[in-house]
Length: 300
Image (cartoon, rainbow, N blue to C red):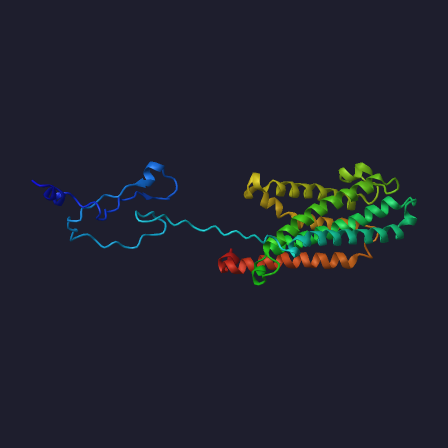
């Protein structure tokens, strides 16, 4: 064997060499590094392709494929944030409330300067707070009746959430005004009511029947407000039948204002209009609900 023959049989090192397969990197989350590195199986060039191999279909975006990374959803963040108008709205609302409060306080202080040293001041305050309590109670009952009225579905505004929040706010306002009304009358030495007349029915010297009706309405209002505050704990079957007695509380307060008020003649239209609206809402709600259920309820 010659040297030329040996060199002829040796492999040609200048020929290109097939590249070595590189392991694929799977970026699917929740997997270890050993599982992400997968070396593909080398297939010889002479091996025939399987005839029955199915054609690869599209890979879903939510499933990781063997030929590419898993598609991840894009998280879009809004860098703008609240606008200038949205940030300034609470400040403007607070400024408006403070401005109205200062204006009303200035008017009340200017006009009521002569009443500071008047012995009738407790009676005037008690009567004024009583009228304010009645107006707040009437508005609260109106909204409560309208909230469950079948005709409310015909109107899109105001929504039930707005009506409910206004109803709750008026309830808190009514309780606060009522406390001021009772305190003013109890501290008045000339009213003839005192603390006994405030808490004990027929314990007042001034118009005992009218004041007693107001005292009973006060206790019933405490029951209604207390059960409504515990609505999430005691269940609807307990608090809601008691809550419907709000109409009875309003009627008792109307009678109390007429019988115990010293200016009932002047406020007669307030009592007439508020009582008529309450009866109208209550009757129409009952009538619409009865007609909606059918003639069987009417016959019963």
